[in-house]
Length: 303
Image (tube, rainbow, N blue to C red; front, side, top):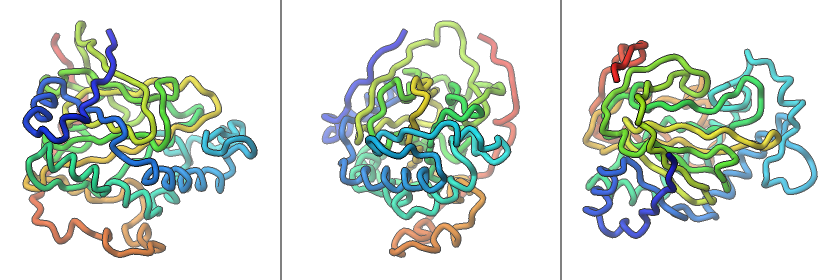
């Protein structure tokens, strides 16, 4: 059973109704929350990286992100970030982009989470940029909860949005409505980003999905089960952000303040033109949470 996302844009000025819908459905979807002029330059920066590594097809409409699939497929799996979709070297280039780290601080996003939390949000510094490609080692993200991978507070919300238009056929995200109320679900190994899957019981099938236009935003809490749809295009790249926000007063796990790659912050910041977002979290009154390694141990769920 699959339903369409319900647009919650009208509730942005009605905090109580917004929180009630979040509690009921477990997700919030907003049409056009981010302006195109904030996203388009980031897409160009990401495509520049793809082109520099020799994978972007020349000619035609560059913005479609058509790939030289044969060249990409020659990248050995050992050099790939299979959870991202490109090589480690390419992902390092992406993580160095100032535009990538600035977009999650857009006022429209900060205002959304101020409304949702009823207080100041903390923007996690670890931003994940998915660049899903048809490389043979890349698989769609399996159904999972973010909490075992992020931890800290259960009040952490994932913000997922594509960098460009993303219809379902390109591999958009879908969520299991109401699954945020299931609590922690035992995990099992799986292919795809995170390498784990949440164990679902028969009848847990109220999936919600939809086509995304550039600027649309989907957000959900850490126990929400979600997954990616398979990409039906064999020569396109799907670009998207995974950004996390939580109430500033809640504890955060240290890895959420570290880069999502092997680089140091000093290496990431080396060519930035502005200083205002460098180490922004160091001036905040943060409470730290311990890492619970048992959450990533395989278990068995009794249905």
